[in-house]
Image (cartoon, rainbow, N blue to C red; front, top):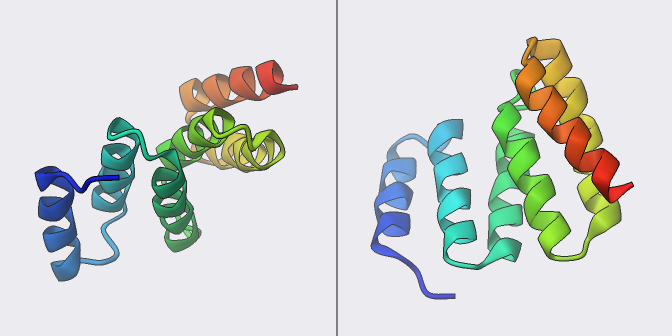
Amino acid sequence: MARTPRMEQIEALLADDPDDHELRYFLGMEHAGAGDDAACVAVLHDVIARSAAKPYVPAYLQAGQALARLDRTAEACDVLRAGVEAARRAGDTHAQGEMQGLLDSLG
């Protein structure tokens, strides 16, 4: 997939602060917007791994959605289950409900 100017801007910012979970998440969303779900998943898996101590909850939902689009349903379900738990621990009932709904639909 082609790289967008926005991807390049985000990567330049990440060079200065590689542990910025939000920037890394935005990079994943740029890949998704460009139609590259595989790259999106790779970036979001990185966000999830890097933010394990304080999970970046939106990354789980978006990774689950991208994996579902790639027909990687079992992996999507695993990510969503972990995301439901992360959202529960964070008290984010909205994200927890969204991920549970997607998980139920993938059943």
